[in-house]
Every structure is written in C-alpha cells, then in structure tokens.
Image (cartoon, rainbow, N blue to C red):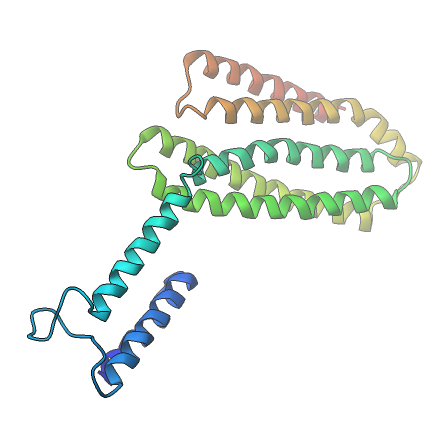
Length: 252
C-alpha cells in the first residue's frame, strides 16, 4: 500500500498532465491512501471480496460522487444555453480583427505627428496590453475547442482559421512592439520626418483599412465552416485591393 500510493503520486507529478488534473488526482488518491493505511474498519473493501457491499462502500460512494459532480459541471455549460469554447473563440476573434488594425492605426497616427506625443505613446502601450490579454483568451478557447469538434469538418475548418488568425496576431504584435520601440527610441523627429510622413499618411491609412476589411470578411465567411464561390471571389478582390494599397504605400 505504501509503495502503490507513493508510486501513484510520483507518476502524477512527473507526467505532463494539466495542474488541475494533478491536484484533483493526488488529493483524491491521498484520501483513499489514508483510509487504507488507517487500522480498523473503514467500510472500504475491494470488489469480489466477501466484505464488499455495493451500498455503503467508501470507494463506490466516492465514484458516484465524482460522476455526479462531473455530470453537473458539464450540464452547467449548457444552462441556460450552451457555452462552447469554439463560439467563445469566434467572439474573441471578432474583437481582435478590429483591435489589431485599430492598434496599427493608433501607431500610425502617433508616427505621422510632427513631434512625439507622450499621451499617444501611452495609448499604444495600453492597447498592446489589452491586446495581449485578449490573445491569451483566444489561445485557451482554441485549445479547449478541440474537444468540441466531434469529427465535424466544418468545426475543424473554423478552428484552423482561428489558429491561423492567432498566429497572424502574434506576428503583428511582435512587429508593432518592435516598430514602437524603434520609433520612440531611434526616430529623429526633424522636418524630413514630417515631409516623409505627409507623403505616406494617405496610403498608410488606406492600407490599414483594407487589411481590416479583409480580415473581417475572411473570418465571417468561415463561421459556417466553408467558403462559397461568391465569398472566394469577394476575398480575392479584397486581396487584390490590399495589394494595390500596399503598392501605393511603397511608391509613396
């Protein structure tokens, strides 16, 4: 008994389980372990033995309690309406496809000014902090939604789109962070800076707007798990429009 209990706890701590699973397993196993080691009658008997009884047995009662508790935890997510992690990820993604372009726009507005503005810089850092928290929420919802796909191709497709969006947002976050540090640390706010940004400003904001519209259409077209031919044509046109905006920005 001592060896079995020590081995079980050691294995649970060494294996790559979620910390909640480890805490639940070790805390419950410790109770049974103590009941086994305590001398005297503890109403705990192994199945297929003479003293085993289905009613009143500690082990059976514990299993029934755990099963009932697990069932109630699952039912809570369906009341008063189902709460799916995939739908949470979808709603979070809706916020992100507006928050990311808005952050780029705030950064652009800060950069096109004739001199650095401390309030705008603080606004950028505040939005970056909010974006980082939202992205963390999206990651968790996407990970949990794996259990909700049930082999459905459409759900898996939406989950793949959300994963791609999550990757893109991480890349853009790194770019914004690097750009912000370069602007605030090394940029020389001289007349040449103002002259150059005056030429870039129109094309810059057009490119940001085109990117936001493209992200929104791509995400909303993926909600039903597939793209129709009409949606594909519309997305191709928006991609072409975004490439033209990028070309105008490069020429400027």
